[in-house]
Image (cartoon, rainbow, N blue to C red; front, side, top):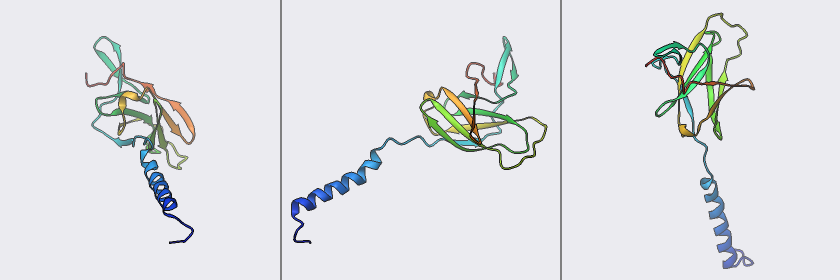
Length: 148
């Protein structure tokens, strides 16, 4: 031990190291949202008259009991994949990776995703981020799905 380093300084240094090591663990962690393609989910729908529904032909989302149902519309080429999902306050930001393909097919594909991992009740908006361009997605909470 350094002769110029007394016991009080040593204890002070030890406390500082312990506090600095513990503080990062006290920081509020962001929820780890994950998205998984789920072909078993029925397409989102909207009601055209009482008891009659038609599929939503575009992108949309709705809250379910323990997940968020996201429907992405697009062409089959390039295949739209979810790269990551982040939460910013009440908004869920879904980063979509369209690959580097400049070729697009003319068909329409509705792909269903289950998004899990955070507090679903906090989410009020869902935004798609495609190469930096952000688009708000239709909230189908009031319209439902075709499983009625």
